[in-house]
Length: 420
Ligand code: HAM
Image (cartoon, rainbow, N blue to C red; front, side, top):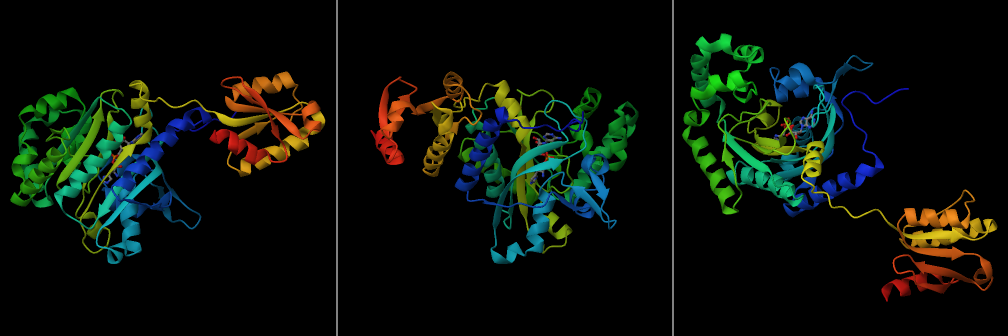
């Protein structure tokens, strides 16, 4: 038997109400903040992600699903959206249509990571990118949207972490200091961090290895190396967050795993989901659009992992979703009346009622069992003496009350009843 690929998950009908609730909430919130939806293709030219995310990152180095198509073009299933959104922004000159483009998305992403709870090879993100404004208020707005969405789900065990990694010049100065600090400790670093010491030293800061963390205890702090403008901007981000009472912690080790960030970085972590605790992450990327060939334009954004949010919501008991239900189950009393039942179902459905009926010649008793299983509000009985008189029995399944309705004016009679 052919099974799904390791690290990917089906969303079965029993899960779908959770997905829909999340997607609806996300859309409502992005609407409140006036973000417009963007959809980009599932795959892009590999060069986009290499250049955008950075050759030395884990995503580009180890995790991308890259393949040659029949014309030998190297393509990659998108591992994240920022590079794709920026590509679309440049390609369609969105910046010349309006100065600030506030965009959001909900989309599958692909990364060949080692699967575990909260970490999958196909996963889904919702996120936003605002292109065209460098105000720190916009950084705060991003954090606010993410935080409001997560708290709206009822999640409680959240920590908002923020940091600023400055601009490349000040970061280089910091990297040199960090290198000096770690130079005589490299042998004590984890294997992964030893590699990063050479290739991407900042990433040592967010190593989960306890030895690395211990060694970093006396390390220089990136916030001490920011240039004046970056310092002021970071102050403004904090002030803006304070204006709405959004609780945050400063984490000077938060450097994030993608190379495009400048200044603000942030994550919201949950302690309800085990080791894959980041529910969302983001930051500012003022150089990315220029790097990908566009007119230099500032940008800021975030993305959140839907599977991890579902996990957190399940673990915190946040899902309080209404049971599935339908409006009508049509119980046909005689087999010959299947066609009639079909016709009434169509009339009701055209008037937006949710209707179910049986086509497999089930007995009346079996149909009633189905009606209960469907959790219907009304059962409509088609057949018997009433039918000969142009009527059908209608049973309110909640209170058991029964009455007759005229089949000729079925929909209007039912509408009148439901308005009572
Ligand atoms: P990221 O931190 O790589 O950032 O991913 C954002 C979120 O996606 C994570 O916090 C996590 O919840 C979820 N996620 C990532 N990888 C997996 C996985 N393998 N399985 C399940 N969930 C996962 C970005 O992707 C940036 N594009 C965010 C951004 C937008 N920065 C600026 N704009």
